[in-house]
Image (cartoon, rainbow, N blue to C red; front, side, top):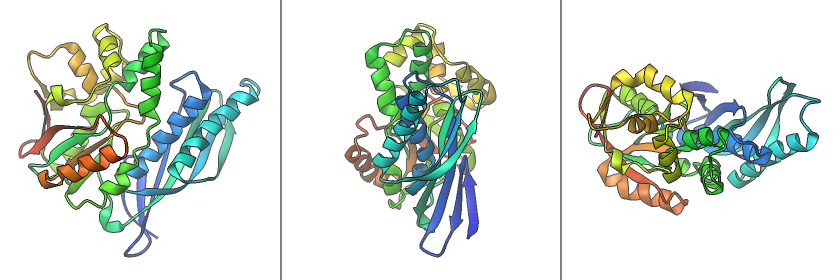
Length: 306
């Protein structure tokens, strides 16, 4: 096998002229109290990198670190069962893995997928004039922050889990649409951070209409009340100088753009004549909040939000 490229947590290895292997690794600590939901979210998050590169998962390996003797066995079993249920939904087995005794619970997957070498999608290669499409609403990080303060409603919790466990399966289909030029999944760097990676990789300017962004309604309510993650502020500190905002925007607008997403949606840059096919693919897979949010333009590698 010959390694042909890497992106984020993924590596691609060419097997032959028709197949390449996509390998990803991702794990993290709980963002929810329910152990099964934690396992489900971690697994969906880990497989997202495979889908974002246009791959179709074929199997996974579990990465498990648990404080042995401190967590009940049924809790550990629930985490593992949650992860296995998402893999079953993706149509793949967990073929093995590795476990360690850790001071804090961690869980994740090594995801292995296949893709045609000519259809590998990266967070670069967008064209001027491309349309930007986002598949999931923003605000997962804000809901998690509200939950930690015991302010999240049952409906808000259900919404958070709904989106964080929804597999980005459409990525494998997007890889077969010729006009799809760049794809990334929105995770810890937030919407603005991951879009800036496309801008830098493509040497283009991104223009986004904030009012077009799909947002989780309860997340907006909490954000306006001052609830946000610490990571959101750190994100802005790291790349805020490359983002232009309307002077009329309030602080919550900026924090929504930098809100870290756990298992967030796919962000696609595609030609205008491919928009219908991309939107149809998302809608067919149940991404009913998918929206056109902006476009790529000639200009410096920056993000302009109006």
